[in-house]
Length: 107
Image (cartoon, rainbow, N blue to C red):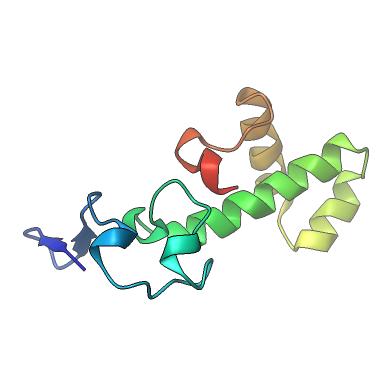
């Protein structure tokens, strides 16, 4: 897998790293790179797996709220704080009910 090193100790994946450029090893979200439904490799997004899982959770929280589920039930079901609940709802309202732009194809 092509890697680009920078001056810090963190490894950066090149965006040009496509499934066709490497063996089909898959990832946590898709067992085979060639059958992957995502627009780009999840490994090319910094902290990709965690951000996608969090965006999916946030989308579910917003969806439950729009269906009329109470704040108290949502907080208990997802194990989040009241502050997190309000942040998620506010973010989705500002985005017109959509996830962050960089994660739209993944959620």
